[in-house]
Image 1 (cartoon, rainbow, N blue to C red):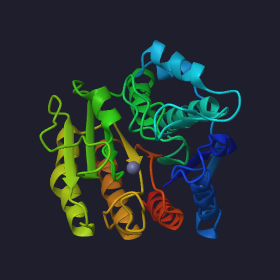
Image 2: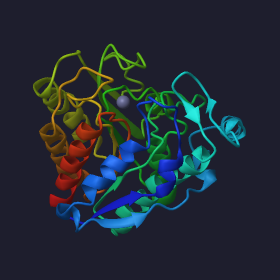
Image 3: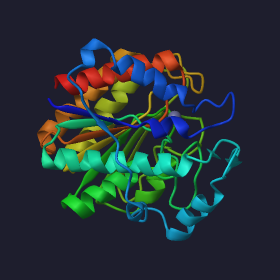
Length: 308
Ligand SMILES: [Zn+2]
């Protein structure tokens, strides 16, 4: 497998207040572990700046302009209690979108079999017209639309194993049968959405997990809910909203996964990508707030991506 890695120093310049869990050190921890020798073969590419027009595939222009106007010249500007803008946040967000779209280009042009994007800010809580939960724009949703518009993908699946429900992705594709959204997440937990009964037009598969459950329940949910939905849908591309905050060390949730679970889940999705989408798999970083849990989980995830 050729696995490409996109990242960029600008992602370290999206600043959040002291003590905020979504912080630049998360990416530093990932970079340190991916600099180790087992990852020498990774095809490392600096993330390109995104095309602003592609944001409009998902978010209306007045919302996008509203975010742009709120970016402060110095200091920080709060969108809500959790979600913050600093002077370089616009450029960081645009480069996160650029990397996600470039990853889609790469898997369709066969420059890579699969791609991991280590970027900030994350995206899956961003709804059509609401930035929230540390997220400004929905990177995975934009990449899915980009695959449809630029590469003629008919069906795109987004699998979200972040411990929080991706309310934004669900909101964006709620009545769109061309995109399948599957999520495992702790419930109850922020943002409160993601009940089993939320099914869109049959294209939304929510598999909530109770607090204090772990590997068995997570793997059951993937096996019994997510994989059958993928087989039924037969996507042309699989995008992973890859949050690693279901790790047992994570401070924001109570699901007890280990690195081995992320390795396993990655393998399952690669298997489906091989079966349905010529291996095309794009993985975008979402959450993960314990630096060690995050770094080890990303290492397991990327090791599996490279192995095939
Ligand atoms: Zn999360």
